[in-house]
Image 1: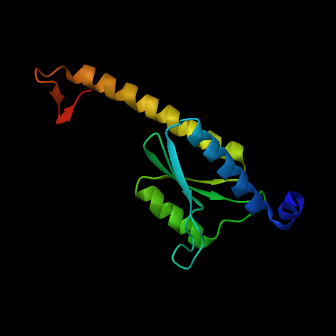
Image 2 (image 1 turned 90 degrees about the vertical axis):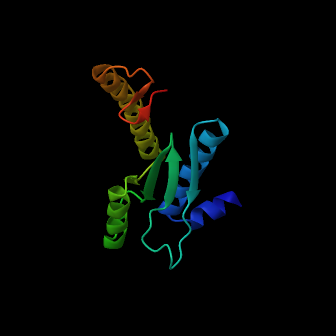
Length: 136
């Protein structure tokens, strides 16, 4: 029966299933992730397929088959999300999703090291506050 179900699905549908499975595995393993699949409707037309928060960073991903084309509306919506500070991307495999999550995680660690260097350069404040931000 599963074979019949898989045979009736298109490549993007199968990809979304694989992405969902991987994200669920990460969630169950205790990774710092939460997500939801954006259900298609008139209200969500053009929105990316996935809302993900990973390590505190919002991510919007559009899943496409290898030969799938991103519509003008989808490009517009992703640009708006990017302008608002989200990481956005088009993924064509589970490996693409994992690569984006890996980049986000590395960037977070780099930013933490960068902040540490800035605080060191600025110097220590007696009360532990530097330019309005409390150091942890």
